[in-house]
Image (cartoon, rainbow, N blue to C red):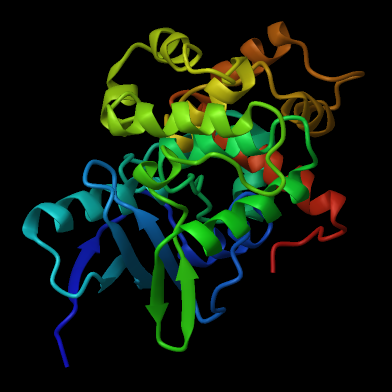
Length: 306
C-alpha cells in the first residue's frame, strides 16, 4: 500500500474543526454531507496547477492533521500548494489569537463566540470556485444553484475516493473554459463561466494576488469580469480569497442579522455597519460569519449549536 503524504497545521487562537463541520452542513453552496466522525473530506482543484487533490482533515487536541489521499505521489510543489489552500479554506492562515479580545470589547460578539466556540469562516475551496458560484446562483434560488453546482461537479469534475465514498471536485478552469451549455444555466451564464475560467487560468483570481491588492483595488479588479457585480466581488474576496477583515455592504441578510443581534429598529444601514464593525477589527469578516451563522440556524429552528 502506498504511503500517503501528510502535513500538520497548528491553529493560532481558538479553532475547532467540529464547529467547521457543523457550519458546512448548513452552508448551502458547499452542500457538505461528509462523515460525522470529526473528519473533513475535501476534493478541489489546486490553485496554479489546477490538478485535483483529495485531503482528509482531522483535529486531535490542538493540532490539525491533513492526509493527502489523492494524488498518491504528489510532488513537493503540489504538497506546498495543497497545504496553503487547506490553511486558507479553514482560515488557519490567519493568526486568531486576538479574536477573543473582540468578544471582550463587544458583548454581542462575545455571546456569539460562546455559542459557536472555535468557529472560523470556512471559505470556498478557491476564489475561482467562489466566482463560479456567484455566476451559477445569479437570479435563482440558492438551493437550485447548489443543485446545479453539484451536478456540474459530478458530471464535469474529477472524482476522489475516500474509502467507500467518492467526492467530485468542482470542474477545473480548463474544463469550464470550453463549456458551451449545461442544464440549468440560462442566458449568458455559460459565457460568464468561461470568462471566470480564463481569468483563473491567467492568474487574475489567484488568492495571493487578491489578498495582496488594496481591498478596493481587488474589488474593482474583480468587477471587470463579466457577470460580477458588487455583491459577487465581495463574496469572492471575503469567502473565496479569505480576506479576514472586511464588511460587505451589499449583503441584505447581513444587515438583517446585525439588526436582530444589536436590536436595531430596521436593517443596519451602511453607516451603522461601519460604526458597529469598528470594534470587530481585525476580524470583521469572522464576526459577520458568526452573525450569519446565528441567523441561518435560528431560521432553521436550530437554536443551539450541538
